[in-house]
Length: 358
Ligand SMILES: Nc1ncnc2c1ncn2[C@@H]1O[C@H](COP(=O)(O)OP(=O)(O)O)[C@@H](O)[C@H]1O
Ligand SMILES: [Mg+2]
Image (tube, rainbow, N blue to C red; front, side, top):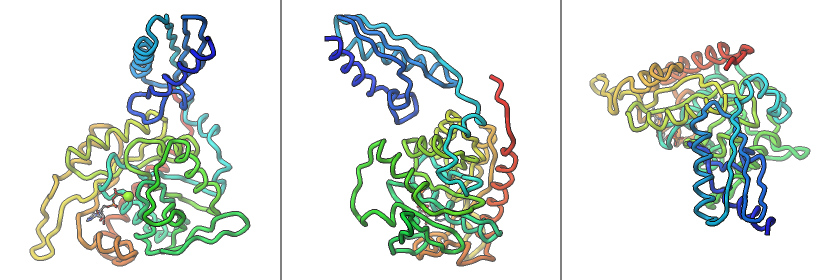
């Protein structure tokens, strides 16, 4: 029956992913039409991307899957590749009403976990606030929210008139799923839940007027990244990496993902960059020096500065007092200050209407 066959084809298509993305091509809206007629199937793919080769790989995979799963059925898979809308147009399509009072939204991302993404997001947010900016920090790391600990808050947020009130701590408005979920309850997140949770953290929270919103994303290139890049007009993304090659390979993937969805990458921050011995004052490059800087140069994106490796940073994070609060005149605060200024400069540089001529 044609209806049954169509249904089966849709199910098969839901297993196909766009290269480098975690979401399937159906939920991306890349499948324009499926028609079945007796033992013939037609699938029309319309894919918006700059990467024709990736779109063709999707087409090949769809063909192979249909041939595999439906022997005896003749399948025709048509592909139309379109260029994605220019960023300016996309920004309009994204929902400005979700966070109407927020001027610049900056996503802090990393290719993998444990590189200090949350530490950098927290200290960057507080440093910007110390520099007189109105700052919000949204902990969107649904897999491991760490802002409740980094800011030393274990209360639940209050609700006023249907809206969640962010905490105000160290000069920063703060919201995290960690305030809402039960502690130690494992949550298994599926794509649509991720989207819903993130939309609520944006739209149902009383963020008010902000100059900057910093978003701590989960590591990698998954649904949270996509949701945010689609639902929020991002001023840009910054990528945190440690200097060694193995971390930088993942950082590159993150960079490619943001470029794919037309989010400007403001640059890379090198974290855990060299250890200054407290006894002799000599710097030891535990991982490697300048790995992230070289990668930034290689990939043609900005380099936003380096943060040294220091146990004081761990202690601050564990004690609910980011290092820029605990030691505002120390070398780390200075390093975060430089990073904050570089981020602001990059935001200003990217904040021009641009025409993309492809
Ligand atoms: N520059 C640094 N020096 C020393 N320890 C750091 C530094 N940056 C982060 N850390 C520590 O590394 C661990 C992982 O950092 P975190 O910010 O949670 O990483 P991520 O969010 O990328 O998983 C934490 O214990 C944190 O205190
Ligand atoms: Mg984290």
